[in-house]
Length: 324
Image (tube, rainbow, N blue to C red; front, side, top):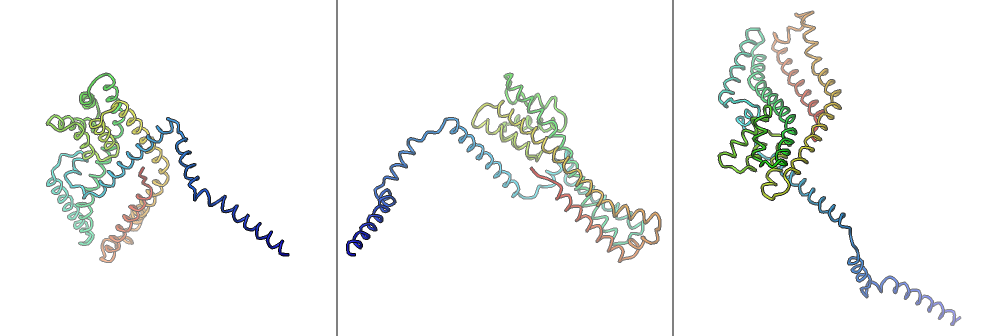
């Protein structure tokens, strides 16, 4: 019995010692650390993989820089009215715009009062005509000008690339674009030439293009030129890649527009239905609906309906517009 107890104790001690030797000895002796160091030294990565990692790291840095620039621009203060007039392609002064807005408000107010719309309805219509209509027109002109600019920009970048490959300097290639490009691209590149002619560096002159044409593509062009002017490199290759990116963004925008046309058509039908019904009711039974602009309660309801419908249209517009 005593011999069995001693044998069991010896076996248990041997098992515990073996487990400790297997798991604890490498940690205590440092053998595992030495193996890890040897594996790290012996490990070799292909040159292509290292190049891919460096390229990926540089791309991530560029993307991070672009995100920081975009966030910084979003945090900037509201765009002044004079800058918005320039972006819309108008040579008006701020005073002239205010005078035109006031004249529109007075005309619509007088017309509403003459038609018997009441003071509340006339005031609401004058506010919409004097404040909303001119700014909507500015936004419309700005978007139309930006579309024309984006349509011609890839071809202009290709012309610059071919000029650089033929041996022309960047400034001379920009002159070629300014001479032959359609509006508004022609006027924007002429502004770059005029700004550079008075002593501003070409990189800063190209960077100011985004202030007059606030689209990401113009910002990309300014960044590429600024980087090449500061750090050097193959400008024709960089601008060729930019041209490819611009064309890919244009294809993506057209694809998004095609996919969202159904939603836009539905929003247009829903937004136009109440005014159409109102006009039809007025044509069939004018006395039934005339209370909306002859009675004070009806006028208040009409103003509330206009505000509510405008809010709904604005929400639907935000839902079907995509940023990429």
